[in-house]
Length: 560
Image 1 (tube, rainbow, N blue to C red):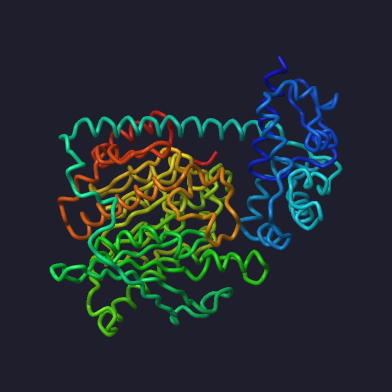
Image 2 (image 1 turned 135 degrees about the vertical axis):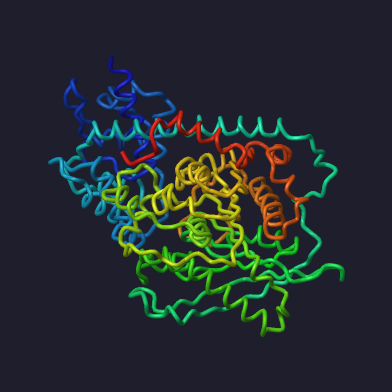
């Protein structure tokens, strides 16, 4: 009788260790009805972590867990994270950090069964400041309550919901792969070995021009950002032969939270080699430099108005490119600013959707964020929109004709209604193992609500939130990303993005219909390589995907 419940409890401990570095103080206490109260001494856990030994009391629980679970728990408890107390303090006092700790505090309570918010925050900061360093076992020693009271019933319910969501996600991903396979079967056979390999560089060289922009019209509008200054790298195609002519369509790349304009250099250079002008900008707020300054205690956190300012950064950039195209000899009227595409990742994906015509759904925002009890991590960021004034913001830019969004977030800020107002072609890219902007609510459901017939859903099996980015381990990042979150070797994912980007924008910015054959399930099969397998579907499979979601999720994905 006890084998399953106690083993499941240790599984919960393991999961909590992944998501938040807090377990208990002197003891972990929980009540498992109808069997009564139970506890685990943290001293027993310390012996287990430091020496690998299982004490007599701890054996009651350890013997009911699988060896791999015990190994995971030990690794999680003793792993040290290279973070400073200032960084931890800044994050836990930020609006998003406070919301997250409040949520976890409902599950991990103090001895008197109060929300563990304050105890969690102090334990995190004290652990980071101690000589022993920031580790899970050290946080146990710093927890301010004599013991921790695990809200076991709600924890079990939460973990059950998470397990169910993950199982359903896997079902959906597997079925979409089957749908894509059926799509490929229904298409006339094409020998892609006989066609131009768009995975390779094109026929253009390129030069990089760095612009330093200053949007003075927005200076001083925010209490936290007095100047809207940012840098932009413009990759300008240089034809190898005189037969190729300008002007060239323009593609803007918008990075995600804590990233910068170098995050997608590979796709910028690749598109430039195929005759596109590519502009990769550093958004002046929520980029890697500004987030580093915030976490170091010398800058304020991003404000909700950043959801408006980010798209305006790109509108201003396009205005400046238009001016420079007419006045600057380096550009010489080579830019076609009436045929513009946008590539966005994560928060940059949100930015691209907003510019393409998605509208805020403030009713949805209030429903999901007051309070936010979602297991979708991206909602903590999306719910910042609840502090915006409900208004019809003028964000859409008519110069933009097509967008490619990778791991975007949209389910709360736009909802089904807000996403349905995008009139243009959209390439939606999802990673099946993305835990930050999960595929089903943030990409797959929005895909079926897009109204355009020219829409595509690319799913990278085993892809994470970071699979499409450049080499993060060799770049400047705010917080080092663990290898487990990076996922498998990302070279294949980069190849997919390069090829799909060329095919999508050649088709929908230049109207080169010969590239449409690359926007098919059969081409995705042709270039797909394990372990990051690629599947691609289009609007022809919308009904099948919609039926699939209705079967797996009998009611819409709503807050629980």
